[in-house]
Length: 274
Image 1 (spheres, helix red, strand yellow):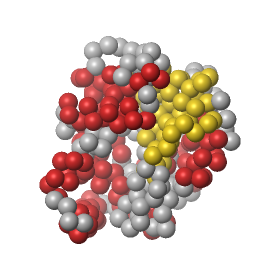
Image 2: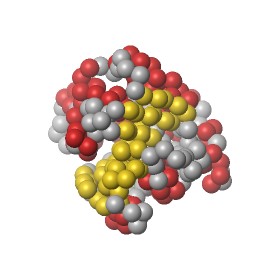
Image 3: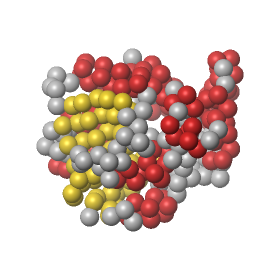
Image 4: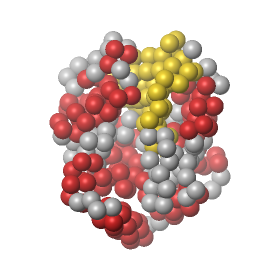
């Protein structure tokens, strides 16, 4: 599989849109509130009220909705996958009654490198490391930030198991339904075993998981196992790269890598344009 196919051919990517479409059927007011609370941990409400917001890799549309609820004057939601575009339109159409948003299909690697429009907040949570060219995607996203604006990104923390997981994700993405089913059952079984070994109640764990950005444990497991293309970065790599683009670090959280055998979390970063 060539670098070009990873970057430009959707058939080489995991079907994130299908996963988000399925997830969207379970959206509740509770999940929407959780999503908004987590966005507020990264972006102060005062920095979003009356400002423009670009959601790169909008998925289910939940975080675009959170931005609108926090007072963004205008939101653009873009995704590589047409099913994510469809799902986001459905989510915003159902839960937001104004027309101060736009949803469309686009590729951060090819469709925005000459964009004239700038945004006060450019947000991309857990997306740019799935493009097949993460550093190029981060730079393109940074070019969309307006004067004194913010770049908010979440990137997989690098662990010693990242190369192993890249191969597993590639295998899952390329396989048929039966192999995917078996891989998913084995993986989720191991995840439950880890919860038990830590002395936690699995049912309580699943309920508490909803407070993490309004996400679903089950659909996040699918997203992780199938998340190909896949790249990761250390905290220092992100800092050094983005600061050279003319930004200052404002905030970071969850950037200490886990052991990484079953998964790795996303480090969250907020940068301000100088």
